[in-house]
Amino acid sequence: MTKKFWNDWKGRINETYRIDLFESVEVNGKFYNRWNLLNHAFADDEVIKATFNGDTVDLVIKQYRWANGSPSHLHTENLYVTLERVNIKSIEFNRIL
Image (cartoon, rainbow, N blue to C red; front, side, top):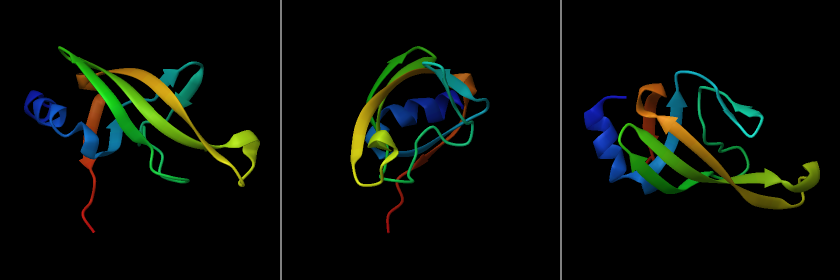
């Protein structure tokens, strides 16, 4: 990710729809694929906090998952991940319908 786009993203965190990475990222023993760190299968995962520190960002992502594998109860949990600017391939912002 270019430094210019990195700086633009800082002002548009709440609009983040996709975070595509160059490599998979491991968080608490679980691997997240390189195509999109945010899931939109059940509900829209969202970035609820981003703290930029030079060329790294600490993200808190609100994730939606089925409780105990049951499709009758959806719950949320927070994912905490640190990403380096050079490992982010692209960011896609919310689409206006």
